[in-house]
Image 1 (cartoon, rainbow, N blue to C red):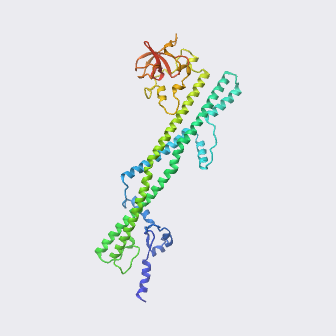
Image 2 (tube, rainbow, N blue to C red):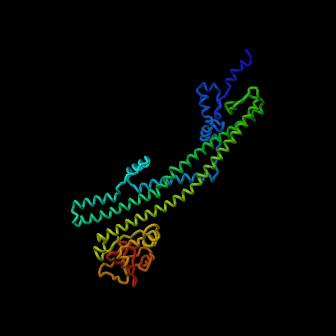
Length: 440
């Protein structure tokens, strides 16, 4: 038997199967390793790196057995900023949904309709439902009785409140919730996809670095020891010739590893640039969300202004102002109030809010036309009050206050229950109840 025939089985057994760098002797395949077809299917179309390289690199990093390419500090800050934006956007979105629709079952139903791309059916608001019950109660209990008449008036006001709430929910959903959902379901998914690709490119790059490092170490060892049989289990060169020297084989392996490293570095740099551009776009997202937040505040301001106006109209119809029902009595609490957020009067504060009518424009006509020089204190019903906090008058109709001073206060029919007429010497003017402690 010839020498070639004797060596043929050994050459066959020493053949190695290369996928993306995945090398195993044929004996390993017989023991249950991946088939040649499966390895070939996993072969990268762009490079010759083995498919298990990224997985092995990831595992070794977890155990602290491999080096990891670190991203620059600016890139890490962009990643952290993007994650923070996503997390807080989710929380704000969920809580706004709860604010607009407290019923969890209704929220689930609306979510299903949106996923099925179907129109959400119109739902009666709580205010409108209350108005319906009050109207039915008045009809059954007697619409001509005082109680029935009052039920009808309150039902009409609650119906208007429900309609205002419906408009507010609609505007907030379109102007605020929809942009937040668009970011989470569109832009963020794109960013997440590119970040996963960058992570995989980074694993491939580090795997190529590790392979090159091992190949260079083996080459240096082979050069020092002379011609030796290559350790295929360690670095797994793709091709070799048994008659060639180990040093030459390792030199060829180093060249191939360097080529793969250059390709991996190029792919990593390209993907890092794509991901960086997407992460920098978070600034534009913040600008868009800021605009939507302003629109949300404006719609909310309009909603509460409408509610205030409707309730003032109802109060006027019912004549439920305590000053009108019980002349000479006081509106407010005798307990000390907590300090207000600022010294600005409610009228001034409301005037600075964008997108809605001011509180002053919603005040009852009788109060707006109040002339202090014509106001005379009632014969009975005046009361002493201690000032809790300093207060700066917003206009000539108000009285400036100093903490701890004593003034005389009284109420007039038709006045806003949050205000009283205060007198100090020959000066008089409106004063807020929250700044006073009424004395017995």
